[in-house]
Length: 100
Image 1: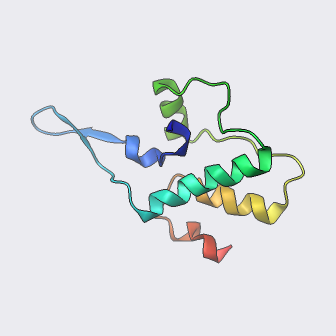
Image 2 (image 1 turned 135 degrees about the vertical axis):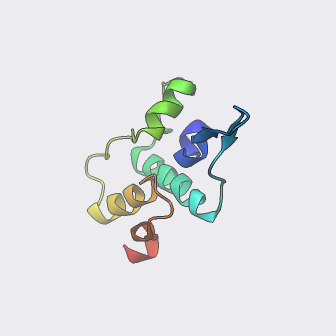
């Protein structure tokens, strides 16, 4: 499940009581990230991060911007769509896939 979750949901902050709280909640914009991952999987024919452990290390890598490489011979417009989706900034207006 880790590869499909909007990386911003893993951002945490400590409050005055030293308790960790989530600073971003899943919403419709978060779903766009998941769609981008699914689109990449369609073009590659394999699950995202196949063969890697779905653990804290992968969460950190994805949170820091690690994404799968573009599949060779994938149409450029298709690549633009899924890379916009997985940008990691769902609130960025340029990530609206209707603007492709």
